[in-house]
Length: 520
Image (cartoon, rainbow, N blue to C red; front, side, top):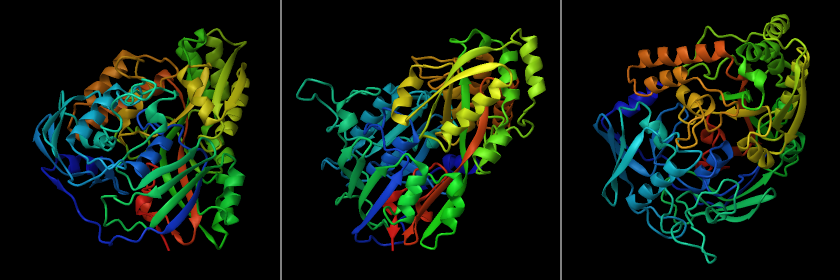
């Protein structure tokens, strides 16, 4: 966090040119993810898959480096004007895939659309507006001093305003954002990124080709074509790499880490992760979940360390809170609290000794071993007489069910989009508010205004020590209230053929910068 704020508080950040010269992009990369992007509209859904697509076909104003600093991209420089204002300078001569040139008109169009997006508007809540100075200069303005302005600016991928403005032949608004709908933006794309989408068969394959007018002529990347094939089954995905069918895969399941390490033609790259895996308990669907003793009983019934050791094969860190170590909100005093007898006692005190029946949903191809984790949690709850009707679904079918809060307990994984603790709370534990976007992914409908107020206080606190104390207090209160059931932070693993130099383009956010990838 100190690196983030040091970069932010500096008076000016200037672009630095990569050392390598542009390479001839002739190589083809065949890669397999566990799923493909569910839409081409990068504002329709805030998810890892969409952010991976964003960094392939679009460019942000600035992006994270591997050590969590900031690197200029479409914004070549920025400077603080006053407590609430940062001025950005755009690169000149940047072209969209359509041939249109990037200007501040496109940035404003994008900013306004983000503020309307169901998934993104909570992130941009602190921003009061955008001032356009000229075609290449603009200012982002916040309503109060905001310590995470640059963190948030990494999620501004300028859209081609001319391309996305107007109506289709059948009279539909090209700029419309439709959740799980068939909009113009969900099937058409024009970005500034290194790759154009040339073919897409949902659930089958996506093909990309290098954009010949890509602005970053000094990128070392030499990949001219990418074929993305979604392979849901872990073993099949690993076999595709080891047999030579694909060049790069993600994620690598824990059961196959050693298999890849022992293969002379492949290499494995791992990182400690910051994505929390958790279950929400829907208080609007289950009366018992309104009782904090029942929620605490469930927290005591779940063996996080057992799940991490047996199901994740040690490739996960057991969690008792949302904030991983290194985040300002991480509270070192909070530990997993597995104790079945304590759980039974709490159920008895709450008047539910005989238990009850609930429904549970989880994806089966979004997180590492997600379906197996759900099965284990269901079995653990049976020990305190909570009977679980479990249903697992592929990611594409799961998210509409999640948005509809279709089960009593639902799984979600979350990586803090701003690399900051407050982002967890704003999306996962804030009192749900459809108008502001707060609590957008709070499938438990948990609501504690006092905790939300502490987060709001932290969001305008620029003293790092005071801010950390506020966020750690939030974690303690959520823990005591058993607001949700944390499981673990999921570690990250990728694998590739030996000649695919993936290490420099990987990061803990898990959106590889494939435009810079070199195949030897």
